[in-house]
Image (cartoon, rainbow, N blue to C red; front, top):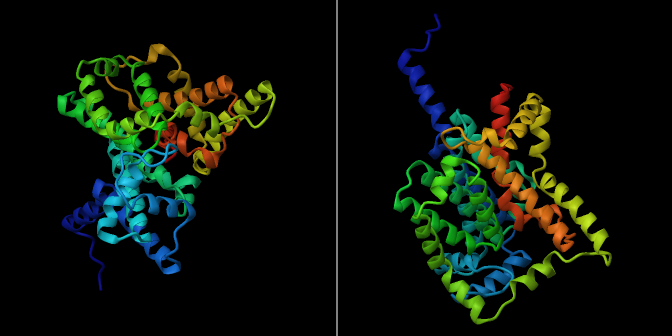
Length: 368
């Protein structure tokens, strides 16, 4: 009995099935399956709500422009909407959490298609948050408002890429719409927007898009989306500066000591937040370290910023670098000492895209 070699049609069909795994729909399918598995496991174990979710469940019984000063209301708004169908149950929280996670995978894939030369790397980049402890593990019992922030960061990066590529008024409105939603997820999204746009100004091709008059349409759209909560803040005379001071207040009486501790944690905490991915990749692909040194050297050399078109890996590097600078300046100016990796969720926007840059180094190093 002879073994027949695969026909060209069969091989093509196998290739099509394999390529589907690296497509947008493949990534979405993985996200949905992942969420379904964990939702089933969680409901099988217990229907009890975690402590933070109990508070949110009470607040979401009514639809309000704002609830508590500490958090913008997007999560409660989503919860109120979903609970019109599910009731005030654990299932409503799980639907939102894993729905937003799947959407994050999708937006990161769309970003990755522009960052990577190979769609397989785009798919791996889309799923890279699962290799960060605070998301891949802590997500399942914590991370409420932060999940909306994660999705907004990925979506806004994709929308900004559309502005750079197409530049139509609709693209600017879409970016503003997503930015407004992001501002309703967590306050730190405003810092991410600033770093994103400031980083884009370093590249001439992106600078022209940022300084285009149509960016006013983005600002208007974002303002409209965020206006109910902004009105609630102003009408209630809530002090966000005092809130920030309480959140990152120095844990020592010495201002100099506080700045020294804060500076150390500002450098350490992002690296810990990226754990274990930032350890796994260099161990498996040591060649990325050499590629990384060259990428960093070019990333801080202004002569390399003008390449005639948008350099997306360079933009992601500058966003990451900007995140470090924000934390360092915060430590030096306020003496903030409360930068711990488990409290890095408010600063997550600066580093959510960093795994994409790390994977670019692996791709370029030829170790894959």
